[in-house]
Amino acid sequence: MWKGVLPAVSTKFKDDLSLDHAEMERCYALQMEAGCHGLVACGTLGEGNMLSHDERLEVLTLCKNATGNKPALLTISEPGEREACALAKRARAAGADGLMIVPSPIYHTNPAETAATLRAIASAGDLPVMIYSNRVGYRVDVTPEIMEELADDAHFVAIKESSDDIRRTTEIFNRLGDRYDVLTGVDNLAFEALTAGAVGWVAGLVLAFPRETVAIYELIQQKRYDEALTIYRWFRPLLDLDVSTFLVQQIKLAEVLAIKSNDRVRRPRLPLTGAHRANVEALVTAAIAVRPTLPSF
Image (cartoon, rainbow, N blue to C red; front, top):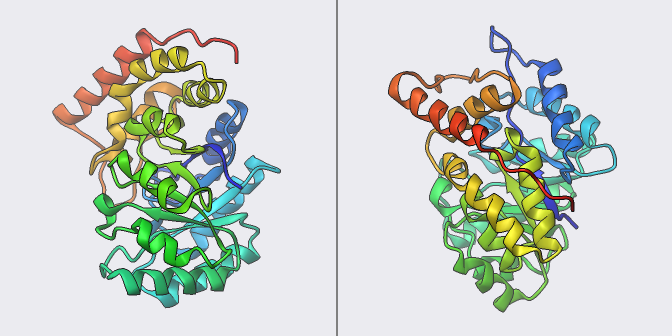
């Protein structure tokens, strides 16, 4: 159902930290113009947990306006099942094409609780669901065993595989065949995952470098692996910025330098300062200076 490059979009703020609709419209249009295949709103990179439900639905609407006939998904990441179900229902009413569901980020559920909660949220939203499996970031491992338990529910159509273990992609296929679309959610494992059978990439650094991200994906689909790998090796130091506690600030700073956006964030996050900021700026600036010429694809 969902394939290709799906940016996990950032949420843009004005000076007073209210939503900046105009800047989000501009940035999301850049993603779609570069050939991305959909958008995912209000995940970790989108600071979803720092937004009210009303604000998240506003961001979803902006995404849907940008994607047109391509999918716009809303991330559901709530401490409690009741709140998650309420947001899932509102997402459907607001026109979401699907949900990306994160297990509770506060109470770290056991396997039975994980499966039960995912089922409840999926039923409430009654939309196609991408399960976000990220044991590193959220401490809950949605394992292939849990995926198999949920396989009887047609709501679950895809997995965002972010276990940080490239072997997991093959384990899912070996256990479940093609039951789920598997998309990678770890930027600096994207080449490895896509060549191991993942059909998509829920991407972060794409926000600053959309054309390069799409090029890697499309070249791999055409089995032009050497060309894709050349771009990926250039991109790799930047992709490491996605795998960090500071991924939001780092990727937003990359957006400042690459697409002239801003790096305002909602508290408790603060923009990068000092040596940390200087290091990221130097990394991104150096990469832009030797940006590869992209082949036709």
